[in-house]
Amino acid sequence: MESGSQSTRINRCLIERERRRHMKALFTKLSTLLPRKPTKMSVPEMVDREIAYVKELQTRMERYEGMKMKLEAAYEVRKRRMIRPVLSIRDLGSNLEVNLITGLNMGFALSDFIHILQEEGADIISATCHHVGDRAIYTILSQAIYPRIGIATSSVHERLKSLIC
Image (cartoon, rainbow, N blue to C red; front, side, top):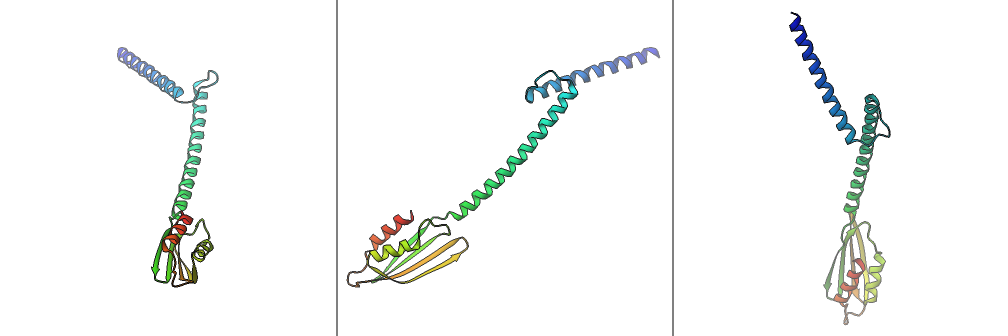
């Protein structure tokens, strides 16, 4: 019976030795993955230090994730608001209809449009504005001051286009 208990004891010693060897390998691997320690530390000190480091990394990661979400949301809002203006001009004989569809953050004043039309020989009959969601739709109806001369539609189109681009 003594030989059986001795072999069991030897097995336990071998198992324990293998467990310690395995744990040492794991601690070595852990120490290579994390920042260098300033001095030699005991295993419990090293584990405590590494746990604190991992928690700090988790906190940083959560903060960066929050910042990322805020930046993505701000980008989406900006993207929705940044609508390229669409300009169309209809020549109706002595009248001219200017339609403009743009975002609410247009980088020009509607008075600039009216000023260009007036410089090109148009008299403003009406101007309307409608807001649909995040878009603004402007319609300006003008009439030639001198119907025989008319309004140079191509010149008006080029000047208005240069204003919005």
